[in-house]
Length: 189
Image (cartoon, rainbow, N blue to C red; front, side):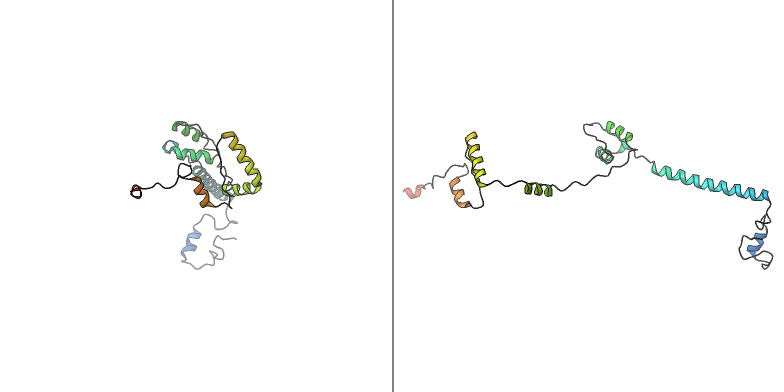
Protein backbone atom coordinates (compact mmCIF):
# COMPACT_ATOMS: atom_id res chain seq x y z
CA UNK A 1 0.00 0.00 0.00
CA UNK A 2 1.36 3.39 -1.05
CA UNK A 3 0.33 6.52 0.81
CA UNK A 4 0.39 10.11 -0.40
CA UNK A 5 2.17 11.25 2.74
CA UNK A 6 5.31 9.18 2.34
CA UNK A 7 6.34 7.64 5.65
CA UNK A 8 3.09 8.41 7.46
CA UNK A 9 0.77 5.46 7.23
CA UNK A 10 -2.81 6.32 8.30
CA UNK A 11 -3.13 3.04 10.22
CA UNK A 12 0.04 3.54 12.25
CA UNK A 13 -0.15 7.31 12.61
CA UNK A 14 -1.32 8.68 15.94
CA UNK A 15 -5.01 9.56 16.17
CA UNK A 16 -5.95 13.21 16.35
CA UNK A 17 -3.36 14.31 13.80
CA UNK A 18 -5.13 16.84 11.59
CA UNK A 19 -3.16 15.84 8.54
CA UNK A 20 -3.98 12.16 8.95
CA UNK A 21 -7.68 12.83 9.60
CA UNK A 22 -8.00 14.83 6.38
CA UNK A 23 -6.03 12.12 4.63
CA UNK A 24 -8.50 9.43 5.73
CA UNK A 25 -11.39 11.37 4.19
CA UNK A 26 -9.93 11.10 0.67
CA UNK A 27 -11.85 8.83 -1.72
CA UNK A 28 -8.87 6.53 -2.13
CA UNK A 29 -6.09 6.30 0.39
CA UNK A 30 -3.47 4.84 -1.92
CA UNK A 31 -3.01 3.94 -5.54
CA UNK A 32 -3.60 0.28 -4.89
CA UNK A 33 -6.94 0.78 -3.13
CA UNK A 34 -8.43 3.14 -5.78
CA UNK A 35 -10.89 1.78 -8.24
CA UNK A 36 -10.51 2.46 -11.95
CA UNK A 37 -13.30 5.02 -12.17
CA UNK A 38 -11.76 7.24 -9.47
CA UNK A 39 -8.32 7.07 -11.08
CA UNK A 40 -9.78 7.91 -14.50
CA UNK A 41 -11.55 10.97 -13.10
CA UNK A 42 -8.39 12.16 -11.40
CA UNK A 43 -6.28 11.65 -14.53
CA UNK A 44 -8.81 13.48 -16.75
CA UNK A 45 -8.96 16.34 -14.29
CA UNK A 46 -5.15 16.53 -14.11
CA UNK A 47 -4.81 16.44 -17.90
CA UNK A 48 -7.45 19.16 -18.24
CA UNK A 49 -5.70 21.39 -15.69
CA UNK A 50 -2.36 20.86 -17.40
CA UNK A 51 -3.84 21.66 -20.83
CA UNK A 52 -5.47 24.84 -19.50
CA UNK A 53 -2.22 25.94 -17.86
CA UNK A 54 -0.16 25.38 -21.02
CA UNK A 55 -2.83 27.04 -23.18
CA UNK A 56 -2.96 30.14 -21.00
CA UNK A 57 0.84 30.42 -21.09
CA UNK A 58 0.85 30.23 -24.87
CA UNK A 59 -1.87 32.85 -25.19
CA UNK A 60 -0.08 35.21 -22.79
CA UNK A 61 3.26 34.77 -24.52
CA UNK A 62 1.85 35.38 -27.99
CA UNK A 63 -0.07 38.49 -26.88
CA UNK A 64 3.05 40.13 -25.46
CA UNK A 65 5.13 39.62 -28.60
CA UNK A 66 2.55 40.89 -31.08
CA UNK A 67 1.83 44.28 -29.56
CA UNK A 68 2.17 46.83 -32.35
CA UNK A 69 2.90 50.44 -31.55
CA UNK A 70 0.41 53.09 -32.55
CA UNK A 71 2.10 54.41 -35.68
CA UNK A 72 -0.38 57.27 -36.11
CA UNK A 73 0.77 58.83 -32.82
CA UNK A 74 4.48 58.48 -33.62
CA UNK A 75 6.49 61.40 -34.97
CA UNK A 76 7.95 61.37 -38.46
CA UNK A 77 11.48 61.05 -37.08
CA UNK A 78 10.45 58.00 -35.02
CA UNK A 79 8.72 56.45 -38.03
CA UNK A 80 11.83 56.89 -40.18
CA UNK A 81 13.99 55.34 -37.43
CA UNK A 82 11.54 52.41 -37.16
CA UNK A 83 11.68 51.83 -40.91
CA UNK A 84 15.45 52.17 -41.18
CA UNK A 85 15.92 49.66 -38.33
CA UNK A 86 14.06 47.13 -40.47
CA UNK A 87 15.98 47.98 -43.63
CA UNK A 88 13.07 49.73 -45.37
CA UNK A 89 13.94 52.87 -47.32
CA UNK A 90 11.77 55.90 -46.62
CA UNK A 91 13.56 58.24 -49.01
CA UNK A 92 11.23 60.42 -51.04
CA UNK A 93 8.21 59.93 -48.76
CA UNK A 94 7.04 63.30 -47.48
CA UNK A 95 3.57 62.60 -46.08
CA UNK A 96 3.19 61.19 -42.58
CA UNK A 97 0.21 59.08 -43.67
CA UNK A 98 2.41 57.31 -46.22
CA UNK A 99 5.06 56.66 -43.57
CA UNK A 100 2.42 55.26 -41.20
CA UNK A 101 1.11 52.93 -43.90
CA UNK A 102 4.64 51.75 -44.78
CA UNK A 103 5.45 51.18 -41.08
CA UNK A 104 2.29 49.08 -40.61
CA UNK A 105 3.18 46.99 -43.64
CA UNK A 106 6.75 46.42 -42.47
CA UNK A 107 6.05 45.93 -38.74
CA UNK A 108 6.41 42.15 -39.05
CA UNK A 109 9.90 42.42 -40.60
CA UNK A 110 12.84 41.58 -38.32
CA UNK A 111 15.23 44.25 -37.14
CA UNK A 112 18.33 44.33 -39.34
CA UNK A 113 21.71 44.43 -37.60
CA UNK A 114 23.84 47.29 -38.91
CA UNK A 115 27.47 46.66 -39.70
CA UNK A 116 29.71 49.26 -38.08
CA UNK A 117 31.16 51.67 -40.60
CA UNK A 118 34.91 52.31 -40.42
CA UNK A 119 36.01 55.69 -39.13
CA UNK A 120 36.49 58.23 -41.89
CA UNK A 121 39.76 59.42 -40.34
CA UNK A 122 41.31 55.98 -40.58
CA UNK A 123 40.09 55.60 -44.17
CA UNK A 124 41.59 58.98 -45.16
CA UNK A 125 44.89 58.17 -43.47
CA UNK A 126 45.18 54.82 -45.22
CA UNK A 127 44.23 56.42 -48.54
CA UNK A 128 46.90 59.11 -48.07
CA UNK A 129 49.49 56.46 -47.27
CA UNK A 130 48.60 54.51 -50.41
CA UNK A 131 49.07 57.49 -52.75
CA UNK A 132 52.65 58.26 -53.74
CA UNK A 133 53.81 61.77 -52.91
CA UNK A 134 54.44 64.16 -55.75
CA UNK A 135 58.05 65.14 -56.27
CA UNK A 136 59.09 68.80 -56.35
CA UNK A 137 59.76 68.66 -60.09
CA UNK A 138 56.29 67.20 -60.80
CA UNK A 139 54.70 69.87 -58.61
CA UNK A 140 56.58 72.67 -60.42
CA UNK A 141 55.52 71.27 -63.79
CA UNK A 142 51.89 71.13 -62.65
CA UNK A 143 51.99 74.75 -61.41
CA UNK A 144 53.49 75.97 -64.72
CA UNK A 145 50.84 74.07 -66.67
CA UNK A 146 48.00 75.51 -64.56
CA UNK A 147 49.45 79.04 -64.81
CA UNK A 148 49.62 78.76 -68.59
CA UNK A 149 46.01 77.52 -68.84
CA UNK A 150 44.40 80.03 -66.48
CA UNK A 151 46.73 82.97 -66.81
CA UNK A 152 47.05 83.29 -63.03
CA UNK A 153 50.20 82.87 -61.02
CA UNK A 154 50.33 80.17 -58.37
CA UNK A 155 52.61 80.00 -55.37
CA UNK A 156 52.94 76.82 -53.36
CA UNK A 157 54.26 77.00 -49.83
CA UNK A 158 56.83 74.35 -49.04
CA UNK A 159 58.18 73.47 -45.61
CA UNK A 160 61.62 74.96 -46.38
CA UNK A 161 60.26 78.38 -47.45
CA UNK A 162 60.55 81.44 -45.24
CA UNK A 163 57.09 82.62 -44.24
CA UNK A 164 58.08 86.23 -43.45
CA UNK A 165 59.76 86.85 -46.79
CA UNK A 166 56.83 85.24 -48.54
CA UNK A 167 54.39 87.57 -46.76
CA UNK A 168 56.50 90.63 -47.70
CA UNK A 169 56.50 89.60 -51.34
CA UNK A 170 52.74 89.08 -51.31
CA UNK A 171 52.10 92.62 -50.21
CA UNK A 172 48.89 93.93 -48.73
CA UNK A 173 45.47 92.42 -48.44
CA UNK A 174 44.79 93.02 -52.14
CA UNK A 175 47.62 90.70 -53.08
CA UNK A 176 49.80 93.35 -54.73
CA UNK A 177 53.25 94.41 -53.62
CA UNK A 178 53.19 97.15 -51.02
CA UNK A 179 54.40 100.54 -52.24
CA UNK A 180 55.95 101.54 -49.00
CA UNK A 181 54.85 103.78 -46.18
CA UNK A 182 53.00 106.95 -46.90
CA UNK A 183 54.61 110.06 -45.61
CA UNK A 184 52.58 111.89 -43.12
CA UNK A 185 51.78 115.58 -43.60
CA UNK A 186 53.60 116.57 -40.45
CA UNK A 187 56.90 115.30 -41.81
CA UNK A 188 56.49 117.37 -44.97
CA UNK A 189 56.14 120.63 -43.03
